[in-house]
Image (cartoon, rainbow over all chains, first blue to last red; front, side):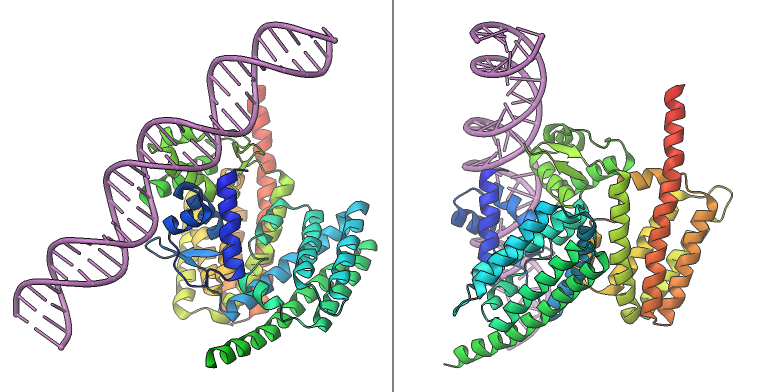
Length: 224
Length: 224
DNA sequence: CCTTTGTGGTTTGTATACAATAGAAGTTTC
DNA sequence: GAAACTTCTATTGTATACAAACCACAAAGG
């Protein structure tokens, strides 16, 4: 891949995910170019990709804004993700290799270690979780499915809110992953799909609960 | 939208859909720029979008090739489309407006007129069909769903093969659309979803049958 | 004969300059 | 004082020039 435009893509994406660029905010190409230390050309390139990934959206007059997702939009995205990842799990159950199964086990073990401590390491949790799901999509061996999923898995607000997940929720993710592993080991595609769909669905509610807590905090801070 | 880059997008897309640019063929930016009568900048812009839409793919070394889909890839795409459009139909059944319902009826009437003649007008059929499905996706009112579907609905080979559809197949599409209309009128989301999924699924087999005929023709021509 | 390495030409990536267009603000007129 | 028009500014779109990467082919060495 190209160096400058990829750096720009990563950098802008991280700024959006971390909340440095606020949802709804307008962003100018020149401005971003300065921040990334490159010219407008690679920035425009990066913006096109971010637009396809629904991280930004353009007004009728082509001005660029950070995507602003409502709770409804998020439920919508989680529903689609549940369908698609359920399908991925079903395919994966029929195709997964011994190596991929081992990799999955390793990731879930890492995930458990990240949260099985007095202070859970949420960043590590998210990374192991991401890789766990990525391996399944890879095992599903469908280029189109992979392309579609890459566009709805990561959502800015979800990242920021994840810090508020409680220990029980994190452990439930681990347990659901374990169940998924069993389903894969048995090559049971129906089981795998239903566990996955439920897993994503529950994740949405965990998010929604944590998000409400987040809102309360924000309101309290604003009141000070 | 911008003039030159959109023209380039449309033009290149049409060249791919029509088969003028053959699957697997390498395409150079400079070359495309000449054809479209613009500079490389808007062409690169268009290529980024076409890449997101899976019309082209890039090699590891960033060279551009026309996407080459195997029959397996196509079945895969049709399966995903069935899932997503089924979901769209389900949502649409609960939300569709009277006006949208009328528009759907009009499109399907136009579709019938296009094929109810001695020599079916397949191009008109495809256009009415496209708009019919587009209205449903619009009625589903999910930005994400729309974004995902826009990336798998149109496939180069399908267009070219459509000319070989027989009259009975075309009429079945019309009848299935009519059934969908009834389901929408009754606001029956479960019915709508199952009719839609079956509709897409059958379309795949119509394609596969016609495609085999296509292959036979090609082989016969090569033998001359 | 096979492998490797260099070189020429082709293709893509980036920067910059300039053109076009949309928004904003200020002025004029009723 | 409000609405419409004009001008100015900010932002995006396009062209072009140059730099870097890559591929293919040929030549040399083992």
